[in-house]
Image (tube, rainbow, N blue to C red; front, top):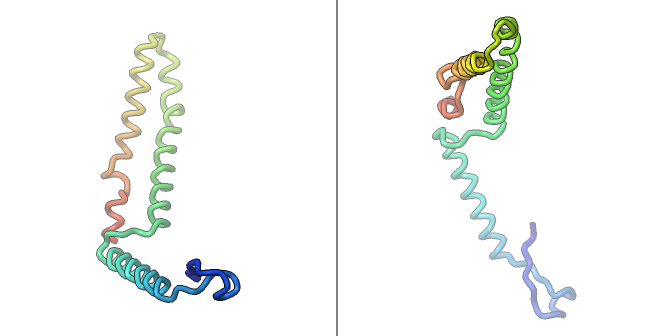
Length: 116
């Protein structure tokens, strides 16, 4: 990107000129930002977005799978129950069990990614 500032009309025919010092300062600034990002990555303080996205996708798939398996596990058992309150308690227990199986100990967490 070329940095320009407005100058009196007629200096270059368009009223603009190249600002070398501003471009040089911005270049140094972004070089420092890149060095800082690299240092943070080496220290495990910065994780690439694609790794986080892949991890979140896997964890979302696990949650979906755990929840979608509930109907097949409880449908026959719930069909024999006449009490709506008992059905609600049974469903709640199944959902709690499914979510417990997805606890941080059972699934990879983003915080552990930084250690790799």
